[in-house]
Amino acid sequence: MQYLKDKQHYEDLYDLHTIESCLLTIDSTKSVIEKKTKIGKRDMKISVDGMANFLLYFKKGERYKTKNETIEKWMDRDKKLDETLKNAIFPSYIDCEYCQSELKEESRHLDSILDAKPRVQFFAICKSCERVALIWDNGERYIPKPSLCPKCHADLKTSTKYTENKDTITEKCPKCDYKNTQVYNFEKSQKERESEEAKDRELLVKYRSEFCLSDKEGSDYITQMENMKRLSEMMKESEAKQKDPDYQKARSVKKVTVTELHKILTKKFKADGYINLNFENPQIDRYVIVPFTVQDEKKSRKKDKSIKDLRRIFNFTLDNLNWRLMSDGIEYRMGYLKGRLKGYENDDELAKFIKKKDNKRPLFWDKDGPVY
Picture 1 (cartoon, helix red, strand yellow):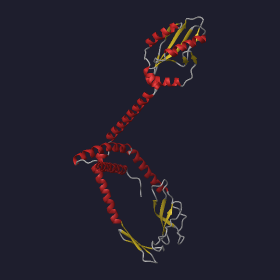
Picture 2 (cartoon, helix red, strand yellow; picture 1 turned 60 degrees about the vertical axis):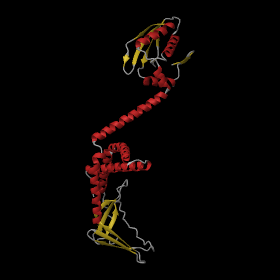
Picture 3 (cartoon, helix red, strand yellow; picture 1 turned 135 degrees about the vertical axis):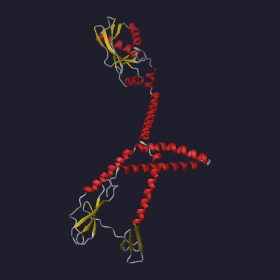
């Protein structure tokens, strides 16, 4: 037999499972509401329809999301089964156990398609005595276990009668009156199978458009679910920010422009003996980075002391503003000091900086606290 079918076969099978699942959801919803509420038929129908439609929205959408992937897996599985069956080699070194003549293959099949590595079983016939044998692909011979009488446990004698559409297998006990007859009616089985297939086709015709989403409907569902997921993540992120002290501090700082910053620093610097603050051309990208120069007016202040005092001013003046001294520090040359300032427009980025600073060791401790 061939396991791999055309793609429509798998699409029909998947849609049929979707329809059956949706119908089961409707029945289950009706059963639950009937048990837990006592309302009239009209209100019952409204309640069932409302709840079922809500559940079916997600049921149909999730079935659509996994449809193509599932069908590809099914087809890949059946393709591998066909390859396994086709590539199996009949073990020609196995002879008839009755006359030791050569066995020839009549047919082959897979023992169990559910196993990770299904085994191939060959139906073989002896060329001389025409006895049959079942041989596995590894050369192992199938040996049926004897049937025992349920009354006296003697070996049962088996006889088989074949007709065109029916096989009759009779087991008799040679030691007691036990007898068991089993009839395999192929015609009846075929009709039952055809009846089931007809019912499946009716379900597909009747419910496919209702329960199986089109590509547009499925695409819309996926988009809505992604939007809901992003909204949920944004809400969780917002809740986390409300509890984060660093983010709250970032929101509370005063947002000032370059011009305002220059005025604030000029005033602070003048009180500590620094003059002629100058902002150079900014680098504007993800952040606004402004190089600066300033002169130390106190001739008696040495290099290290000048850098330390200026850093202290930056540390405390910028603490409640949206600007920070960059990590490359301050350079001193003959009374000139230069460095770079970074401006934060985004509270999230400033919160990250604050968190990083909280975990960073200070350069030194001043009388007013740590200086970074």
